[in-house]
Amino acid sequence: MILVLDNAVDGGYMAGEIVHFLPDARAYNYPNEDGDPSLEDVDGVVIGGSGTGVYDEPDQPWITEQKRFARRLVEDGVPTLGICFGHQILNAALGGEVEDSGTSRLHLRDAEFDDDPLFEGVEPTVPVLHSDVVTELGEGMEIIGRADYYEYFATRHRDSPVWSVQYHPEFTPRIVDEYDDWEESDRSFAESTATRTLANFADLVASHAGQ
Image (cartoon, rainbow, N blue to C red):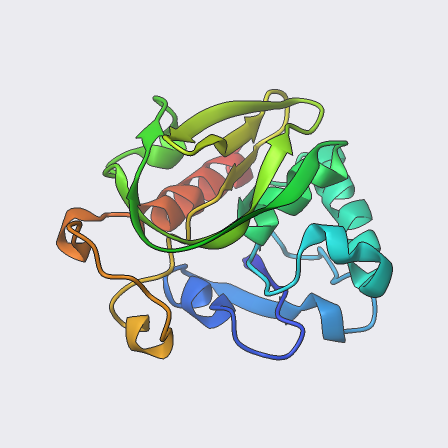
């Protein structure tokens, strides 16, 4: 089973869409539950997005707890995928830095991905919804994806089965009408196979469980 950490403080933020695209997955609303979720019968974890920034930690004590939980996932070798806020908190938990870039981006964007199994069949066009960015990698994290405005667009851990991406692979035309600030561009969802990221992660989790 894949556990999806829903990091929405006041509802929303697409955890349900992540579950939709993953087989045998369930969501756990981390900010509003009491403590860490059990990892019994959990084969992998997805850390989802949030309307909160990692730097809001003083006002959001659950972020401190999730950082500690994220370090546990890395140390225990639990297959983990961080998405947007999840990308940022994984790096921050390992000593990296996250800042508000000052520019909100809600559109399709092109990226350059390394030859990594997470990106098999993933085309360069992916949906982004963020202003916060990783400005310094966490210890052990390496760059596996870049955008023209963002050096640390996707990362993975060199020793543990942990990946993170700034884009939202779960964001599709199914829900685009729910986001009034979404910006149309010359790119099209027909060019995007970002949801393959989630399928590839599920395959990586299954492979790890079979070892």
